[in-house]
Image 1: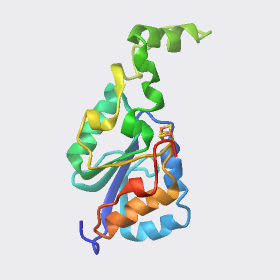
Image 2: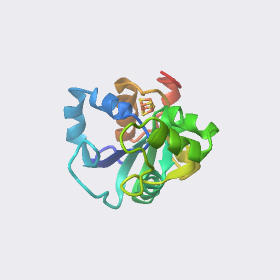
Image 3: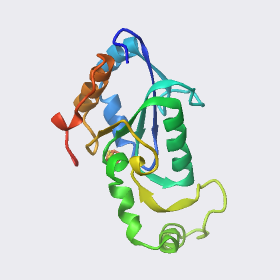
Length: 180
Ligand code: SF4
C-alpha cells in the first residue's frame, strides 16, 4: 500500500455489539486527520448502501452467526484488498459463540418463544436464518490481520491504521490483547 495515496476503507459489523465501531469513533479528533488520508466508502457510519469493488482496507467487527453475516464476510473478502478482523468476536467468536453449545432449535425457542410474551413465534421473514454454529471470520474467509480486544481501544485502532497508511504491516499484539 502506498504511503502517499489516499486509501479507501469500508467497515461493517456482523454479530457484534457495535462496541468495536464505538471504539473507532473514540478516535475523536483523530478522525479529522484520518479523513484527510482515508475515504470511508461503506460503513454503518456513512450513508453509502453498496460496498464498492477494489476497496483498499475492509474492517469487519463481529462473528459470523447467520447467512447474512456469511454473505457479507464473503463480499468484503472479494471486494477488499486487505481485510481486518477487528475485535474478539471477529477473531475468536467470543460472546456470540456461547450459543454453540446448544442445539439450534433450543436457541430459536429461547429467543423467540420462551422469552417472548406477545405472539411468541419463530420469524419467517426479515430475520436471516442462523447458521448451525457461530464462527470467527477467518473460519469462513481468509483475513490479512487480526486485531484482538473487546473492544480494541481507539489507540489500538489508530496504531493499526497509521501503520497501514505508512505502508507498514502493523503488529497488533504489541498494543492489545484478548479481552483488553
Ligand atoms: S469484541 Fe467486544 S466490543 Fe467488539 S463487538 Fe464483540 S463484544 Fe462488542
